[in-house]
Length: 151
Image (cartoon, rainbow, N blue to C red; front, side, top):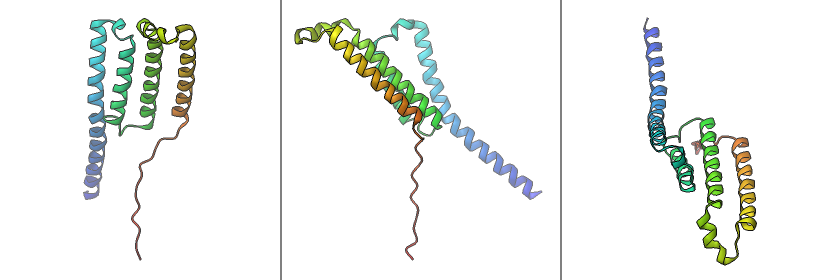
């Protein structure tokens, strides 16, 4: 009888720890996503399709990855890293199509047709390398220092 109560206690403690750990990460993530969805619903999707927003989204994903999602699974971390890569590529391509940028760079001899093409090709190449790097890399393991016996 005592063994059965001990097993129940261990199971309840184990479930509570894992569920508490999951809720600690899930609730803030749902809060951030709900704010983004409500803002998109009220402002429309055109408010989010510009280069500052894409760079800001990449920064937000980076902060989430270093903070709330630091203890999450390797699959979720890879998905967030791919989201960062996509946001950076989309933001850079939108920046390359931004008219005032080329108006500022035209006196220096940079044109959209020549320089912009080479910059986009370089950005897409770097993006592909980063996607392969993220998807094919092994998850980092926690480094544990082993205590050695001086004897």
